[in-house]
Image 1 (cartoon, rainbow, N blue to C red):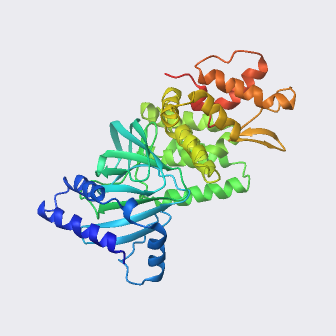
Image 2 (cartoon, rainbow, N blue to C red):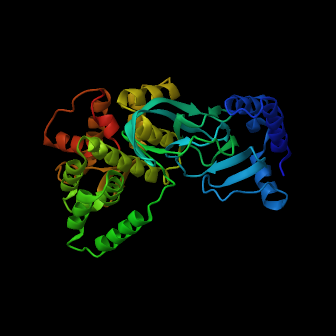
Image 3 (cartoon, rainbow, N blue to C red):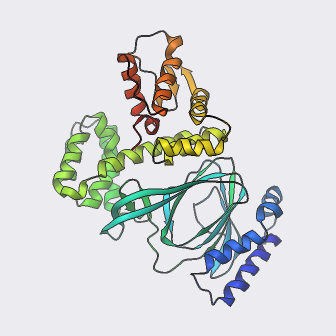
Length: 402
């Protein structure tokens, strides 16, 4: 049992008891206790892991799948202290049913804060509204962030180092602050714990039909979309988006959804497309380990537009032109495969007839022009490259800044 965290837990308990266990004061109280004796300056991570592996006297562990892994290092009926390891994890945009504070014990992360405006409850587990990013910040080792339960603290973390490790001092549960919604920009909040068994089995059955290349697949999905309520219709759309696009039936599915639900359906296509884009970047993150490249992926995922992305690049590299730095990252992330040149999920168009030795120069030229807020006018080759980038994870840098 780690003595440092036992002392930290007792300190938090003593101070919180004086405040009559007020949930309102707990985030600041936890943050202050962490700041007074930073775990990052007093805890040797290697020793902590060794002791946890070799000593049986440990606090009761949870069955949580959060963290890679989660270690409970102090427990009390009202709160506990956990250590979360992150190897390739990127958290969804989420809120909490608990309060407290977290501290970066090792590594670094991009921390994005969001707000959810114009909220409308469709069911107790599904809401529509407007998800907007308020702020992005770089959290280095030693950083401390308070956590308040409920919708006032909506955030996500994109971990840059392997591993990144955080210490969380948190309540067990704050009554009345659930569900612990996840957010899909720009318009959806959903309860990730809620699971409708019938919808789950229907999605699995649709997977069977897709695997069998059943000719009735698209027609059955369209009939479901035309009949289902909004929440279940959305989840069916989300689950079948890629197959329907491959079958050239996606537009028909969106039309059926809009016809069924009217103005309520507005923005759902953009939400599903954004969810796909973010998932692609998350998947790439698992194979990209260089912290600078992960930092860039985090910006591609979370920055609201090109202008904000370049501002954050300039903050991290104040001595460089941010456009030059992005082009440098693009070059480092470029690969030449049997199918041609690839930059992340964007490949050089095969129908552009030009010397292979000019491919990199052409695609970087289009990127640089867009980053400088220009219009990449030119011949058909330039337009084709622009379109290919605009339909990839690079789209944030390609589309005009609002």
